[in-house]
Image (tube, rainbow, N blue to C red; front, side, top):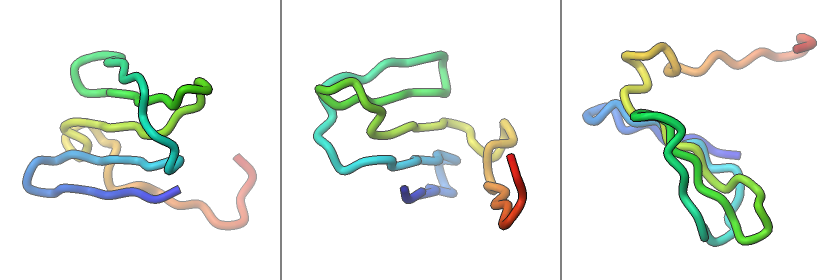
Length: 65
């Protein structure tokens, strides 16, 4: 997994896989999910990420979720 944040546009992209994207679905105005042919999630795009509290990401080390 890797993340990319575009600060000028306030867009957070969470890359989960390098599989080719075959379908994209908008969950709402600012959340978009891309899927591979096998149905697995490839990428999540969050618009207005910082404005909505999704960025910066909080990374927990050694704590149970």
